[in-house]
Length: 200
Image 1 (cartoon, one colour):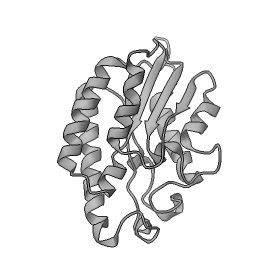
Image 2 (image 1 turned 180 degrees about the horizontal axis):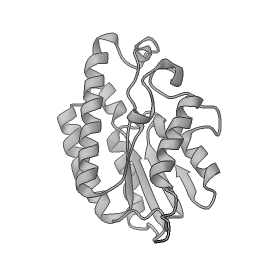
Image 3 (image 1 turned 120 degrees about the vertical axis):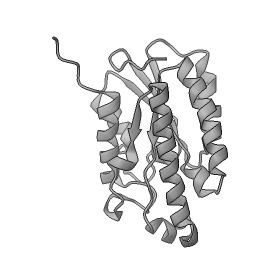
Image 4 (image 1 turned 90 degrees about the vertical axis):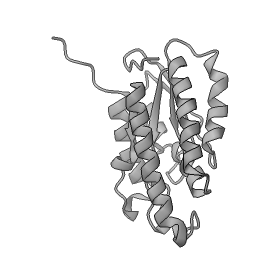
């Protein structure tokens, strides 16, 4: 279903701690910043720390049968799956099936998660031995998601491109800090709330 940013009045955000805003000051997560900046659109944050990709799909499905005409949905996941050593080929196969089905039923946008820094090993999110492979898998995952979104003609937000892979922008090497979430907000606003097209 086509995403029309000029008709949407409510967006449901599904994801993990990156969507929930873990690591930011209260009210300074990127979804909260969107709702403050665009008060005419209700931004409902369903992000939950620890969510795996399958969890998000399970949570979004009940909305499909009762979605209203001015509602839209955002989905970003995969980081916890990859850090938990879920097989990437399975994750991509599952995501391709589920995102394709969702895109037929609801206006959907997809997020490409950021890449962690090595500090994430010190803070306990992954081991030093797994860091390089996990980063490689996240890059492959993001490339897969971008290609899938292009094929389905649905918008995507590249948070990995928006957030420099530098500790200055991170709370713990995995989650952005308040400064990092400001960059998330700007990247999301450019896609979800584009300026009106000029009259021709």
